[in-house]
Image 1 (spheres, rainbow, N blue to C red):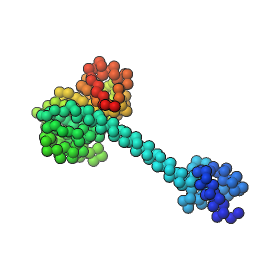
Image 2 (spheres, one colour):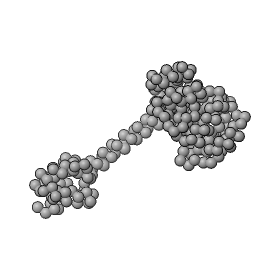
Image 3 (cartoon, one colour):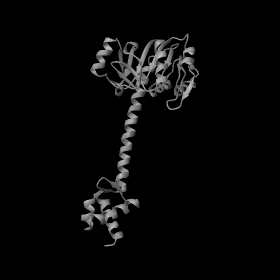
Image 4 (tube, rainbow, N blue to C red):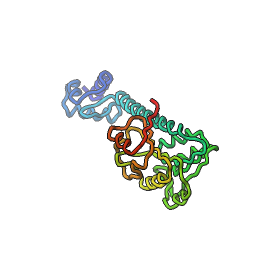
Length: 258
């Protein structure tokens, strides 16, 4: 049997079964492993099959598998986005006209920015928040300056920001979190963490907006202990160890609507 005939036979079988092991190819064609290997290599090189561990699969099957994986990722991403929006919605319901607020750098706080409907004043070092709030004419918006962090889209220069906040005291500081443990609130970026720390010191009430996945996780930098937090807004009850710590530190837990 010529190679072209063998290849046609393999492709036909792949359409029926979806995948074949190396041994399956040997038995199907009644050929040696070396011959089967050469046929498999050619099929893969010509784009008629995809190499798998120990065999090959049809390109259609692998395409469908990739679509399935992508849909699963997109579903998880959408669920996470939906949970953040619900957390942001809960936070937005607390706002009143004339409130003076600090808005942190985080995707959840950016969602909060989109939901602002009250005549409030907002200070932030987040470019994402700035782009949203600058379009709301009823918001007294202040962008804190400094150098621009392109990766995480915020401005930082602690000396400059301290001078901008010298006589400013917030009714609320809304803070995101990379992690929240018995020890406090953690963040990824050092400069960002320092700015949050400065804002927290100047707030009457500090709200941490975080989803359940961040509980009992740390990151690189801590900028607040539990004693600095007044309220945690989240999508699920925290684990028992954190509930006990929250209780002893008089931290209120606000859950989103299911």
